[in-house]
Amino acid sequence: MQVDEVRELAGQVLDRVQAYFVGDRLLLEKLLSAALANGHVLFEDNPGLGKTLLAKIFARVTGCTWGRIQFTPDLMPSDITGTKVWRANTNEFTLEKGPVFTNVLLADEINRSPPKVQSALLECMEERQVTIEGETHPLERPFFVIATQNPIELEGTYPLPEAQMDRFLLKLSTGYVADEEAEATILKRRAEWGVDDPTSLVERVTTQQEFLEMQDAVEHRVHVDDEVYLYIARLVRATRESPYVEVGASPRGGLSLFKASKAHAAINGRDYVIPDDVKLYARDALAHRLILKMEYAMEDRVSPHDIVDQVLQTVPAPVKVERR
Image (cartoon, rainbow, N blue to C red; front, side):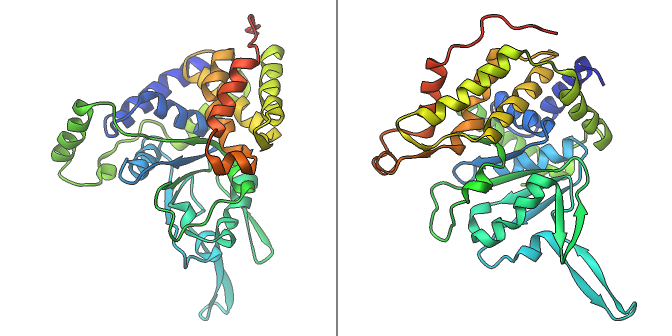
């Protein structure tokens, strides 16, 4: 698949999602970029803003299989990965696969479960495989997690471990709709659907194989100039040098920014990355990986987003990059 074909299909995917989800198109582009970059997304926002609906519609539109896990305090790791069950009729153990064996996994309210359960996802998210009782089972491509969490309802929640946060390619926020007209559109569409969940009405745009080809095109057909590589590296290293930061962005953060920038270039029909691609995703790829020093975190005087904004202002972007 060529980059022009990726742009055409990506536009169709975004148009179809927007037919059901009322929101900023740039947000949808970022979600699609993460998926094409084979990365995971964490949505953090207030309840009722359509995080779960967006994830379900996106999975349907891309033609991928999807599964959903509602994280609760009593969830067990085997509820996610699966387990072996004794079958008396065959006199042997058989594998009962968990919901993680899918293409798009919706992890709803992921911070509702204790770290032991959350850590069950780490191997799946990084190695795309599951180990059950000593046996390793690969996950089918594509596989990516769309997780949600609410920032205001903290009772009965567990902060995600830093290692797990680092495995999310992007951290996004849906936010409230722009104006009263958009708010009214949500109500009108609900009246047209006749149901609260329109997922069953959504028609796919791509097949699973076509989506894999789009991912491969992003990986192999989008060029990144040496100056852009250096620009990403300088941004990442600058987060570690900030006086407000205890732990800066990891090398995985730089890789996430690199992959998201490539995907965004392909969505826009370019076979090369420009500095503006990197700037657009810097906040979403790096901010959630920063750990502020205690005194600044407690006083709430500065946020990780502020740090990334400062870095973008101080690190000069390349003036000219080579297309090929």
